[in-house]
Each structure stands twice: as C-alpha cells, then as structure tokens.
Image 1 (cartoon, rainbow, N blue to C red):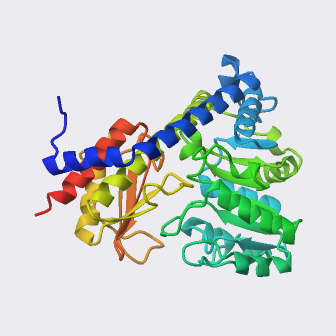
Image 2 (image 1 turned 90 degrees about the horizontal axis):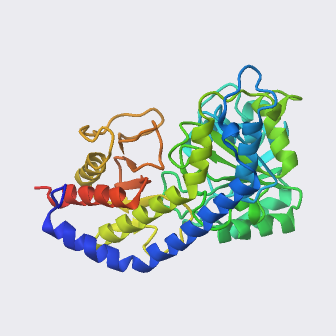
Image 3 (image 1 turned 45 degrees about the vertical axis):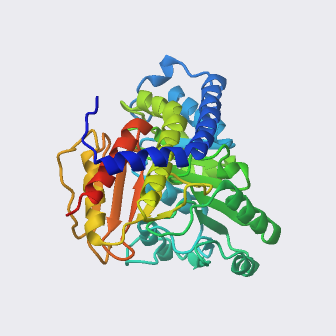
Length: 416
C-alpha cells in the first residue's frame, strides 16, 4: 500500500538511485554501527544512571548528571574534556564562547577555510559594526581563501610564518559549493600547522560533521572543537544546547567565558532537559547515519534526473549536507515545497521566498521540524540566485527522508 502518490518516472528513478548508491549506503551503515557502539561504550564507561537525569536548581553546584554528560561526550569524541550545556543558544554561540575563551587582545585568528559562515562573521567583526566583536577587543583576523573549492595549502604554509594564535577550520560548507572537510583533510591541515607553528591552537567548527566518520577532529590534531546539539550531536532529541570539546586546559578557559572566571563549569543549573540531552547523545550516531543515507539517496536521485550535485554519490563526505544545483528559480521553489510536504510537522505549509536580513537575495526554507531550526531533521534552504543550488540536510530516519526527497523530485518532474 502506498500512502503517497508518485509519478511513475520518480518511482523508477528512485529504484535506480537505490541501486547506484548501494555500496555507499552500506559504507555509511558500517560507520553508523561503529559510532553507535562507541557511544554505547561511552555511556557504560561513564556509568550513566537514571539519577543523572534529575534537574538541578539555583547555582547548579555538584550537578553530577551535568558532569557525567560532559564525560560522555568527551569519551565519545575522543577528547580530553568537554562542556555540554543547554545554555548554549546555538552552534554560533558555542563557537563564540570558545573564541573569546581562548583569544586575547593582539592575537591573530587565521581562518584556514576562507571566510567563515555568515553568523560567525559579525562575531569576528568582518561584517557589520557590532559592539563586542573580536575586532572590538583588538583581536586580529586573517584568512586563507579557498582555491578551486579546496584549502590552499601553499598559502596556508606562508600565512603560518606569522605564528597566529589560532588556526580556525570550518568543516562544513555553509552556503557555498566547496567541499566539506573530511577527517583526512583536517589531519593534513593539523600536521602542517603543528610543523610550522607548533604553538598555534587549532580550532574546528564541527557543526554538521559529528559522527559522519569514525574519528573526530580532536583525534587527528585539532586542539578544540565546538558545535550545536540541534544538529548531529544532539540526535534530534536535545531541544537546545551546544558543546565545546578538546584539550582540558582549553576547555577550562572556555568555561570561564561561559560563566565567570573562577566558577567556570561548576556553575549552571540544568532544568528539565537533561534526560533529553542524554537520550539525544545516545541516538546521535544512528540519527547522523540516517541523515547521511538520505543525503546520498537524494544525490543519486537528482543526479539521475540530470542535475549537478555536490558532493557526488561516491565522494567521501565530511558533513551531512547535500547541495543540488537545480538550474532555475522554479525548480528551487518546487524542491523546497516538496521537502516541506514530506515533513511530519507543518506539512501543509507552502514555503515561499522572502527577504532575510544579511542576504542580498530572497531565501526559501523548508523545515517541518519538531525542534525549531533543527537541521538534523529533514530540511532544505537556498538563496534565490545562480547557480540556484539548494542545501539539504537531515532526516530522523532514512525511510521518511527518502519519501521527502521523492516528493521533492515529484514536484519538480511535474512542473507544467
């Protein structure tokens, strides 16, 4: 029995897409199983108990559950230490706390992967004129522009001669068609940095990249990394929050920025979210794998339909994001409307392009999510401009994700 009406052409293309991506899907499932068992072992090693789900109030002193949750993430990530908090409002907030926790006036932050994602630019002070940016505190910024959608390693070596305090790596692509960095790419960067400027701190924006591979950036040379719990790391269950993980001394510095110097991580009540944060952590490797499989299927299906895709089906992936070049505005809008119609929440809503602060063109977004802004759930968004690319991510499970992608294809294929 079919619950959805699909054009026969979409059904045939879907069947072919599954066959073409069979090997890649099996590779993802192997990583998925490895990371899920890694997380299970982390829970066991850290002695997670039901008592750790209890709330704390006031200052939150001696919150054992909060401490154990930190240990679970540190263990699963292969980090020396971690702080995981509901009080992080976004991935950008976690990254900001880490930047301000580590950098000091006169230091230089070197972005290895070109200009960072939009929301972090105002934090640095390279866009807008916001009081309290890194620039406002006398922290310098430099970057290594991407070359042919990859890291310019020769220029990186030259820039490192100045001995910057931090080498900043954005793992995911943002609104660009450059490749997301794999663990092998991050290791290559880290090796170069440590050889030329051993005291430079390597920081990774790990958003969209957690549990995509068997290793995490801090296991291949990164000193610190940060991300959001409403993306991969929260398993679609954590209702808010973020994390910082890495070397103990750096995590401690960041904790002083999170609360106050001296109190650091010892302060902070956990109210009504701890069970969901533990449960989200446990499910994160599996949910990430489901999102990866959905991305590969979408890539294969739309490639068979004749559209450009990035990354390609057999490309090693560094994040959960799939970009599809849909050639024109009509297809772009139809895709997002199809994704919305395949969502469990607000499926009846019709996304339309609109102006968005900070963008020079209208933007369309599709997201029928249980958690507002969650991009581990099936979602898609795009600015209405050439090359009319849409960035799709998420799906709690491959089965519903596949249906959503097919509905998007159905919408496009039946444009009159």
